[in-house]
Image (cartoon, rainbow, N blue to C red):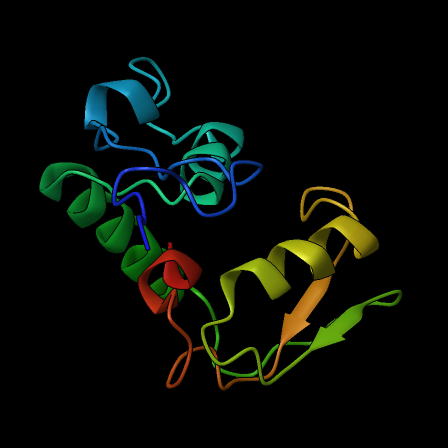
Length: 124
């Protein structure tokens, strides 16, 4: 039997993104904010982040969480999500069905990571 070791088993599935997303490519130089659309596109392609980019995102999230109250009063309507377990592509499906976070209010109840293959992507 002659089996190719270089052929893609499922040619319809793209290869993962090779280049790491760099800080300069993700963050706007004037506002300092990340391009969420660019980040999602990169992570959907199974791309990785360079260290500076990842650390900046983590620090932005930390500052945001530290500035928020630990008890929130949430106004309706709200989409309630729980038990994602690091399933990044399930999260994308939920966001696609429910609407962009800029337009839809989401409340995540926990269990973000602990089992899924894409736990880091989920946090970013």
